[in-house]
Image (cartoon, rainbow, N blue to C red; front, side, top):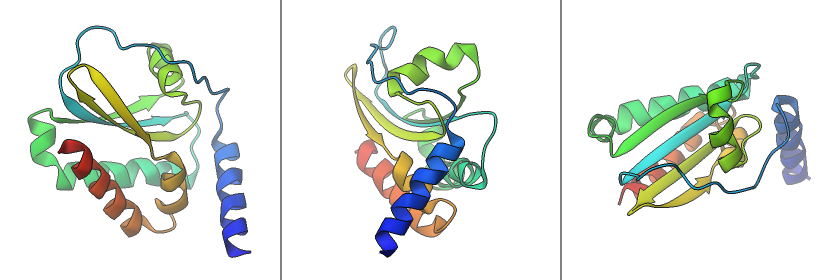
Amino acid sequence: MKRGLTILMMCAGLAACKGGDAHQEETPPAGPQRDRVEVLYFHTPKRCATCAAIEEETRRVVEEQFAGQLRDSSLVFRVIDLSQEENKALAKRYGAAWSSLFLTRWREGRDSTLNLTLEAFAKANANPEAFKSELARKITMFLK
């Protein structure tokens, strides 16, 4: 019962933050890609408390625990406003139509992506320490 209620609340939160239709079509990135890990947080102009917590806690993990990787560009953190025209192609590539969190590893021109959106919505506001711990673990795994 508790699990069902949690899932229902997550779905309601996602629906409340929805900014448009998701696209699942893949588009190859333009130009050569340098080996790196990207943390991508997509958002709409109107955000709920959980959406704001996702960005805040993600930024905190990246800046506090991976400052060296940010400096040498082996890790990149991007906050992407879905309402900006220049972000439409990237949003389409990831299928992001509302607040979404992705972790992408680029190696030798190929990418591997992990969608962390549901986990972020479940934990960033309700249990930020668990969210930050899991996010840091996954970033560390992708950096290896």
